[in-house]
Length: 232
Image (cartoon, rainbow, N blue to C red; front, side):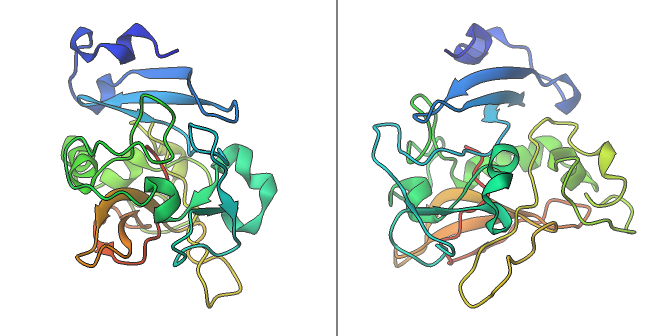
């Protein structure tokens, strides 16, 4: 059950990111996992990665070691380690995340893998976070405190990482499980974030390469259909 403050945003007062509100154990998926939620600006976001192996209607999702370019909805484990799932969630390809439905709208209107009452964000919805957080060191404000490779560059998520995550969004650097590589790519360095927007061909969806170990949120897109870092 979503608390009233999440159900009716008109009752919530908004300001800068320091005034966001955090709610524990308010979202449940089909598998029975519970998640926290956070208000940033006038949006409500889940604060942990999904770890469900089913859609909300009970349809199962297939496991693949490296599902990035697959057109079959599939998930894999962060760093190929099932033991990391409780803390980091699962990694989904774009077809699993969106159910193959593309949208550039705000809101996207695409439930995809999200629990009932929630949806997968479009590119435009993610850009709202960037505008709310802003600043030269915006990446630290949305990055998790754990998991980042140590960096000597001031203002990056890997520099004094215990000062990260002032928003509560908690983006973890799970990297990408990609074909052609024996090891996970950019684990400890990059958070990949799902969006519903699709390429002009519609074959693969865009992923937002949300933050690397740079000071600012680095936003660009590619047609790999990755969608691995799944905050919905």
